[in-house]
Length: 181
Ligand code: AR6
Image (cartoon, rainbow, N blue to C red; front, side, top):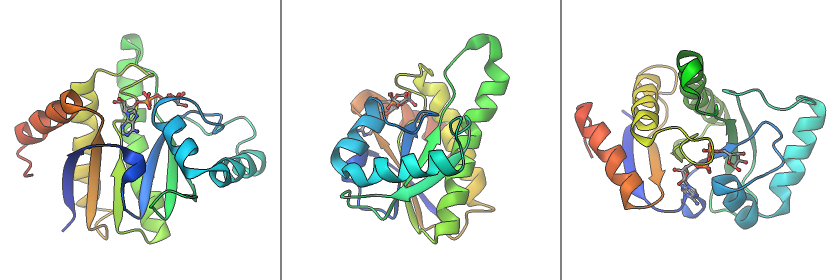
């Protein structure tokens, strides 16, 4: 059984096997979670991102995909970088599918690495503008379905929410889905 947990906090401080980064296609860093991870994790993460970019994704990592690097100086073993979609109502269905894919792919990569514990931020819910309650519904629904199947070796999937409002929204959605804390 995989436990799904919610905490309020900073993703860069999590002692887990995998920390998931809400990256962009360039894999070269940015603001929000991405900026914090590179800042605290140090230059080794960026070096690996550059190498991956050059060898696999010259044109960038596609939205909805995930790739692993070292976690550098973070208290984690790996960072899994995923690229969330920018929120756009006109293409809601496609983009919601891409957001679900971020969670599925990140868990697949984490399971392949042999990870047991994974921490996620609320992918796409910052700079990329996804409404938090809907981002929470997609995140929690997808993770709950994935840990019941392909990622069942994981012992914990933790959502790390930045601030009490984000935590409260995730908690409400999770309880509404029948989840336990
Ligand atoms: N720990 C946990 N959550 C955080 C942290 C943190 N240290 N910092 C921010 N959040 P965002 P996105 C929350 O913008 O929307 C970057 O520039 C934040 O409050 O990091 O997927 C990338 O390079 C929000 O709820 O990711 C991309 O260009 C959530 O994490 C772009 O932003 C995600 O916010 C990706 O945008």
